[in-house]
Image (cartoon, rainbow, N blue to C red; front, top):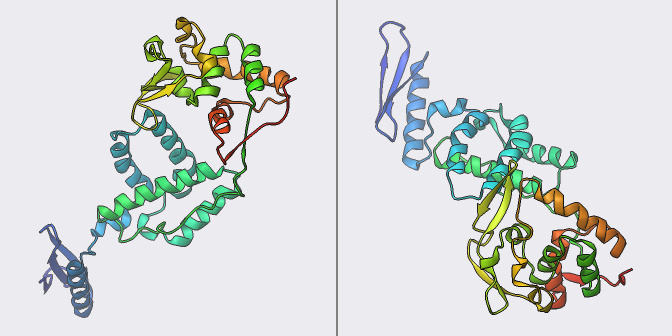
Length: 311
C-alpha cells in the first residue's frame, strides 16, 4: 500500500507508492481527495497487472521505433526482408504516425491511416506489410508495458478483388522463348521446368547438379542495396529438384553461365521480355510466370495454360 502526506514546502498532497519493479514513485495533487483516489486506482491497476509507467504516455511512435527497430535488425530475417521493412516504415508508417504519442492512438486512427494508404494506390501486399509492421511495433510496446492494448488488434486489410488464374506458357512457347532469349536460354528453361525462384536460380553452381539429373537447391542470391547477398532460401531448407528432359540434356558446364552481378536483374529481364514480345505476342512474361509451368503441367487448379500458339 502507498502513503499520502502534505509536502511542507509546496503545501500540496503527495501520493507515494512503489511500482511493480519496486521503484518508489510520487504523484502530487492540490486536494487530498484526488491523491486518495489516485492511490486507490494505482493499487487496483497493479493487482490486475495493467500498470504502465507514467513516462510511457509521452513516448511517440517514432521514439519507440528507434528502440524497437534494432531488435528486428538483429533477428534472423533475410537481408532483403529487412530492406523491405525499413523502406515501408520510412515511407508509409513514420511520416503519417511517427509524431503521434502511442497512448493517444485509437482504432479509428489506424483505420484512417490504412484507408489513406489504399486511397494512395498502394498495393494490397505493401499495405498488409505496413499493417503487419505496425502490429509488431505496437505488440512489442504492449508486452513492454508501454501500451495497455494494441489498437490494431482485429483490424485486417481486405484483398482487392478476386484472385485471377495465373496464365502459364505452353511448352512450345517456352522452348521458342528460350531460343530467342540467348544468352539466357538455360535460365529460361530452369525457371520454366524446375519451378525455381529467381534468387535460387542465380545461386546455382556446377556442384548443385548431381549425376542423377537433379538440382540441389540450398541457397539463394538476392540484391540488397546494389550488392548480391547470399540467403538460405525462403523455406530455410535444402531440397532436390529433378531436371526434366530439356534442361537435363544440356552439357555439364551449364551452371554458372548466369553468375549474378549487381545489375543482373536488369541484364536478363529485358532480353526475356523482348523475346516474349516476338514469341508470345506479349511482354508480360517474367520469372513468376515462368515458375507456373510446373504447376500447369501437373494440373494445378490455380494455374491455367495459355492457349495462344507460338508465332
